[in-house]
Length: 421
Image 1 (cartoon, helix red, strand yellow):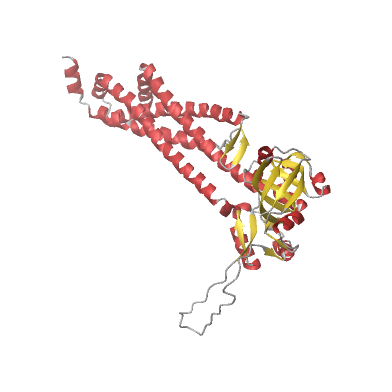
Image 2: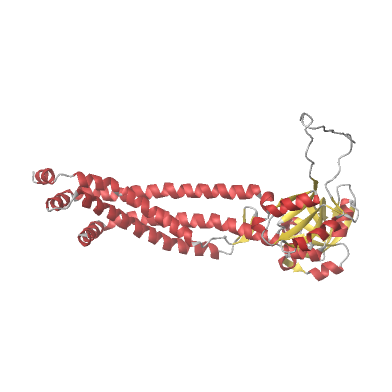
């Protein structure tokens, strides 16, 4: 019986080739667009995460002291005192004092399997001047050998090298975005003007490009120069960058470091929370589109089956008079919807493979949110194909139930009598 129903379903589908092909084309195009969109959005998130994990610190120990727990003066239990000292004072910049001690702590055996690298840094807002061009940028003073283990800055250099940086007094590594805006090239001189108005000359020993827009808009200098520009003594820095063994589960380690050091410790997830939330919202919107476009495709499948039921009413009546049950009629047209949806979805999956490959091969540099990439970051996760294809087939099959119920309610005697009039 199944073989008979299968043959009839195929004959119905092939009997209206143009309408069937049009419906399958609509299903395949919607499937292709959805898979490509999910691949693009997820690929951008994966690319952002990989780039941040590779080129940015996983945890930053910031020069922000954690406030002590306030005393509850209204708690009657026990006797407690609260004292206010130096209630009027000047605002002090955030800084990590005696950072060498913290470096010893994070490199101790207690953290040997958790922390892989540590690099102190000093950040200063400066004005960079080259000729008649000027631009406010962030200057980061670092120990270049430690920084290399954090950001792999050496392999991100597009010109110059770290040897030149180490040998050149007041050497600078300039982000490509800054270099482009200022018209800077290797070995050029840049004037650095600090917030207090003092200026110094620096020589460009290298230009780097990481793909992270925020990083490529900075200038790197030696830690000593950064301390001089910021006006810090040798034992103070703005913060300490850390690389950890498990960057996807670094929150417990950050909490532990906060408790030990007394300084605020920010994970890369916290620092990029707004971007990650944006990606999550985009993902939710894309999943909603999957449902809406699937419903539209389902209407197309239902339309072709409604027409088939209308045109094949006499055939359906004859089949029922030969003993085919109403349930078999429902199964027949639901199976037709399944075949149309499956054929269109599989074709859309093949088309999506081509579209994803095409977009990934484009060597056009573009700014994709917080990143600058050459080409589009696409994800080839097979689960996206499976998910969209399954949802499309399910919706097409469900949509076929509407005309199939009409076919099941047809009365053979009435249909045959009316067809002879």
